[in-house]
Image 1: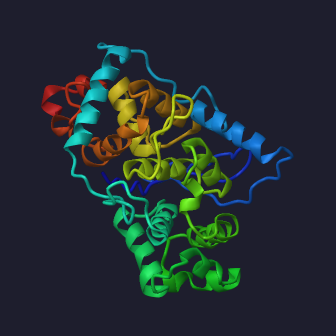
Image 2 (image 1 turned 60 degrees about the vertical axis):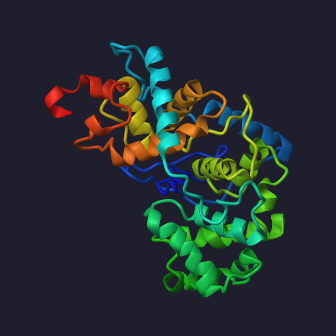
Length: 332
């Protein structure tokens, strides 16, 4: 199934790394600042980042914020299995659309060209409409660069000034930082992974692939989406109990969980605590593979669980959702 997830809550910064979020309903901002200098070894930092990701977030802020309500007539614990079953059933009913360029391979390894174009689309996927992201990646790779064998080499061949001067011509991203970060990641892929995105994850555990993505400052939540897409297309094995493949936490996921589990109005901004809370809930709901809940939560958030006038009567979670249970019958 394809869920492009073009509304990421990411951030590059400090303390492995600090995360900064906007308060937008649909999208969150990814900042592209320089990483700090760490005195520890790569192995130490890798272990720390894997362990930090298990807790659900890398930096704790304002721990009193967004604490879940305990008032629920059905009870959170008894509600979670019902919600899980409904979400997984909804996922099974959806059309099996492929992820761009790496789908429909029947488990075969993606080619270098396919993997590189997918990775390009993935790193563009924030604060952009779904239909724009993958088309922009295709246009750059095929129309402008003539589908080269070495996409990242072709991008990195420009100087910083040359690349930045082509922002309007290429029209890759609505924000300058979005355009600039493509060149920065291209340079890292060429120098560290021979310009082949597959080398980031091939032969790696999900944990190590996650660390490599973080070290390139792809962003925590976009990295989770990439790992999930690789699992969906059989390019990567699932995680383990110590490092599950998690959902990509964003405003839609937080909103649906907040309403369905706790019956509240719905968080629309991904604060650090709501990220940790969402990861904790989805890990409890589907411990072996939380990622399977990602697409259904996002799609329900977009199509049914709207911020204003949610379509509760049409929602696949109706009858299991704490928020819908509280609504007057004539409001459903």
